Each structure stands twice: as C-alpha cells, then as structure tokens.
Length: 447
Ligand code: PLP
Image 1 (cartoon, rainbow, N blue to C red):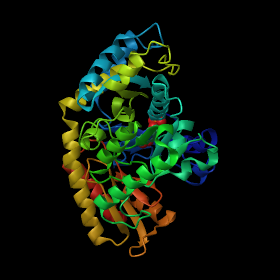
Image 2 (spheres, protein in one colour; image 1 turned 60 degrees about the horizontal axis):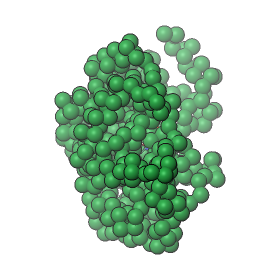
Image 3 (cartoon, helix red, strand yellow; image 1 turned 90 degrees about the vertical axis):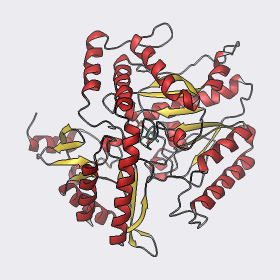
Image 4 (cartoon, rainbow, N blue to C red; image 1 turned 45 degrees about the horizontal axis):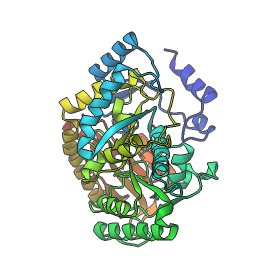
C-alpha cells in the first residue's frame, strides 16, 4: 500500500466521488478506509470504529464473512465469468435462482432477472412493467408513480421516479410521465398530520387522487421502498403498504417494491414487503445479496406476472434488456453463500432485536438533547435522527454543526452517515448488544 500522504493527495487529484462536488474532496478529504474486520473498519491513520453505516446499507454480515470470501475465490478459480444472454447459462446462477425462489416464494415471487446493482434492478423493473402491459394489449400504460423522498438509484428511469430534487435537477429533463405523491413522513408533511395512521390514509387518498387525475389506464406501475432509506429512514404506518397494494390491484397498476436496502433482513424480516404482509409484482434487490462483496442484484418477479410473459405467443415478451454481468457466476456464488449464512445465523431476527435496542437508545438520547427533533426506526436495523436547531420550529440544523457531530462520533468510535439534517444508521445485521452501546455512546459524546 502507498503511504498515507500519497493516498490523501492523489485521492483528490485523480478521482471524482459519487454524490460529491468534484472540488470538495480537496477541501474536505474523505476518510480513507484501509481495512475491516467484523463490524469494524480501520482508516489509513489506524483509527478503528464500529461501522454504523454497514458499508452503504449492504455489508449485512460484516466484513469477515469467510464462507462468502471462499465462495468467491472458488468460483473465480472454476468459472470466473460466463454470460447468461440467450443461448448460455452457468451452474452457479441456476442454483441461486432456485434458492431465491425458495426464499421469496412466500412473497409470491418465483423468477429472478439478474443485474449488476440497485440502479440496474430499478431500471429492469420499470422496463419489464411497461413490457407487461404491452404484452397484455395495454400499451398506453406507460406512466410511473412514486413517493416524494423515495430513492431509486441513478439511471434515467430511477432518477425520474426519485423523489428528491438533489438527484434530479442537474440531469433534467428526465423521463416524462413520472409523478410523485407525498410520503408518509410523520415529522414533516403537507397535511400537518402527526398521527401516523391518519397520515397513511391521507397519503393513500393522494395516491387515489393522482391515479384519477392521470387516468388509471395510463399508469404502468407504482414504485416504493417498504421503508424509505436514503430519504432519511422513513417507516410508514403498517396500513400504508397494504393500502398501496389494494389501490394498485384495483386499478391494474403493478407494484414494484424497491428492496435494494430492505431485502435480506434489514427490517427484521426477510423482505420489507413481507414485513408489511404485502406481495409485490416486482421486487428489486441488490446490495446485501452478496454482502457488498460483489456488485450484483436480482429483480424478483411474481408468479402471475411471469405467466403473462411466459404465455405470450406473439413475441412481445422477448426481453430486449439485460446486462453483460446479468447472472455473473462469481456474484451468484457470493449470493448463494450469503443467503446460506443469513439463514444459518438467523440474521433477520438479530436485526429486529438489535434494531429495537438501538431505537430505544436513540429515543433516550432525544430525552437528553433538544437538538434531536425526530427519532425514526423500530423496524430492524435502520434508524435515523433528524436534527434541528429549534425543536419547536423544527428548523433543520446547519451543515457545519451536523458535520462536527459526525466527526466527534467518529473519533468516539462510530462511523455514522449524514444526509441533510439526518444522521442515518444502517449497521451490519450481525451487530452485538455491546456494539449498539458503542454507537450510542459515540453519538452521546457528539451532542
Ligand atoms: N434503490 C434503493 C432503495 C437504494 O437505496 C439504492 C441505493 O442506495 C438504489 C436503488 C441504487 O442502488 P445502486 O447504488 O446499487 O445502484
């Protein structure tokens, strides 16, 4: 490894970072991570902390998962690549498809289409949704609905359904026909409603209203995260997603669950959809499918949607979409090992228990510090604090103060993520009770 000063200097000189101003890494050099074990990362200066970000919501099983590493190495040795475009396949991806089918059959999802990551998975689901309606003779169903504050990756389709201007404005015009409804965000919403159950009903009414306005028979799909993640960890009331499902079904609109964060245990269930008792038509997955060790994703497809494609006799169902790395054997081998470990360790159960502990601890911090305006969590290991400079007026805290808090927490032993006025936590799901205390104590020192 090159020395520390060389790396710091060259980081700013020769690369641009996602989601950052290109000039920013000179003024605010990033933390250069050089090693990791378990749930801890070590930076270039040798400082070790609990990674309460979990890589980027993806390293669910931590950084030392030996079975996944061994599976990757063995697969690289035996068959490092082969395509799954028409005419070829590979054994690893076939085995994985059977496993995914077993895991997601309770959600009614029985086929997989493979991708290289979350944005690819979203793009795939949006495209297949339009194609589904074309196969059924409803080519006019082209529009997409989604939630404000939702995050669906960065491809043009995903950016078009994204509900945050930060990811849209510089790249507009985006896809036509994408419309957004208010998110069930209890702390701030246009209805001034603080009761989550009532707010869910208001948001569902807004969805009905938008469908009537657009014309139900022009809409292909509604896409949502079961718990909004990047938008600031916003769990809806338990009535919300089932309500969306009912409305979509009644209007012939497909429901795409964007589970790039929530699948594989994050919410304390195998999937966010299952957490709310909902069967989506498509489920987008990526991130934790390989524990972040290999770029990979899968879109799971509902049995009845699959039958429409498979029953087509006209050629309309031929899929003119796919990636060089769709069904990559190394990704498939990593995913197989990852699923086996997730099941063996009963990771969703630990996520639920440690998530409840973290959430309770954050609520206790909010009793102590007025700067905490809102505490969100309670559904597995995804939590957020929304910080304010004035609690009564809910004035969002300034960038500098939240940056300082993040820095102090880091020095005190925990890496947390800051997004706007939110401190976001999505640690590995193998976290122990003692690790939760480290995160809470680091935050306590930050306030
Ligand atoms: N969808 C959701 C819900 C996400 O959180 C993300 C990434 O954070 C994406 C899609 C995009 O995934 P990727 O960054 O792997 O392209």
